[in-house]
Image (cartoon, rainbow, N blue to C red; front, side, top):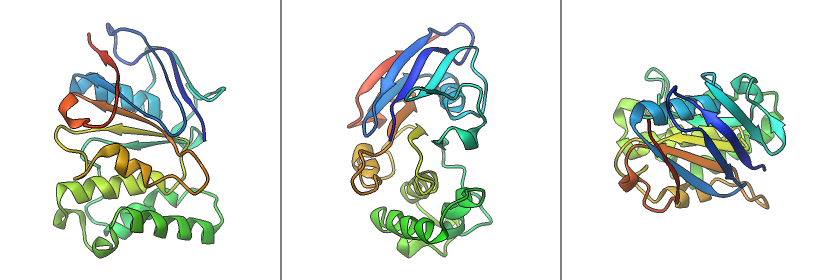
Length: 202
């Protein structure tokens, strides 16, 4: 696992440049208005280009790399689950382009489903789930690909029906510290147990 390093990163014109390290296995939060927080999450994940600055995973610069090559997973606000797919297919959707040993991928997916208590929901579609369950499905979809960094665009209110670091802590493979977790939110009250690293404003 690796440390996420942001160096003088500007996601939205006119906002303060951000420098931050999030070590493997640690969680940190950025508090920002929704457009800024979402822009930061998308830039770190590779879905948008930064205005300025650099993004590194350990010493590997990923600023110009497309999302599949960053080993950074993204949980968008609301989860962005595919409504026509079951929970099972939503969770495994992110693996479809990964070159992995199939047995290892299946075993890890089963472990994630068990740790997030999603087994009873696997054949349901997202509209039948609670908000907390949808968050857990989106989280599962992100971590089954074994990312080194996890970026969460957190909606207001409690995260996934539980303490966020406790949920994320269940998802580290054995004998590893787990992913570096960056949470972007507009609501400090939604964080509960995640330390606020910085507040970002225009």
